[in-house]
Length: 367
Image 1 (spheres, rainbow, N blue to C red):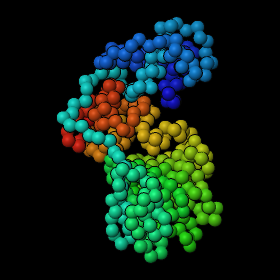
Image 2 (cartoon, rainbow, N blue to C red):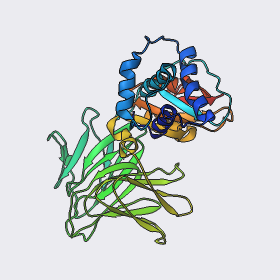
Image 3 (spheres, rainbow, N blue to C red):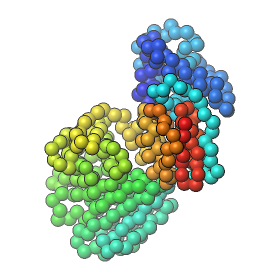
Image 4 (cartoon, rainbow, N blue to C red):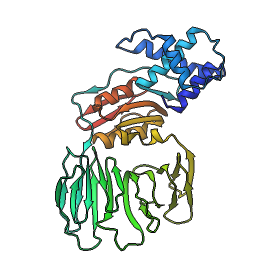
């Protein structure tokens, strides 16, 4: 499963340590699911599922639980692995109808534009997944040539993914960057002669930096600077997000706010959060969840509605409109980014507490 809140709740439930409110939350998932699911599922094999649950959770508790409660916890485990469930601070847990839509929207795909220093724009193939800069030549990652750059010295190149696009780019030093939707990376056509390898990011990118102790790699965003020698990390620095997030997978990085008054070193499985106040905080994270977008998934771990809808907006290239004021809610679960928009929002809607309507490239969010 891999979802921290669900694991903690189920473990407490099985260990008979859950509060009455936590028991109600867990059991309400099962009750709502069982009473509102349109497509009936076969009765779970509780013995098999219990074995799976115990293989996921540390068996710290006694197994002398009633089969009814084992069945509920096991069913919840299955439901969470299949769909989206939510924590709603409101006591109202009504279920809503299917998402209303007249048209459907396909997911994002490999799309990007490279802008040369002379202003020329090159639209790269959507049947390819990446591009490399090899000297004066642009090359797809399968080795096929695109065209010459004709750069004079270290001219700045720009690669941009639109909303509904993503792409890989191999920089002149061998560093590989995976760009998420609605992201832009600026970098020099060569790092030769430069003391530092400096690039500029707007949006989200996952970096696999080639090691070079003599020439640190620096990523500048609007609000922060990340300095590394060679490592794997992710930066999310969208202008419409309230925070800038830097997540370290391996190695070490130095994160510093642009005003230079606040900085920190990250260790693997840590994430820095730079707020509007320029204050940086650090927390431990599940890197698999944080990098899910790169692996073709949306993973929501108690993610609020607004953050969830911003991600959907970028990947499906849709505008989000809130028709009603909604109570605070957050989502828990995993959805493939290859699914159509209607499939994704239907799963969100089935979690309860929110309703959607698609009108063209507009998604209306309602009670």
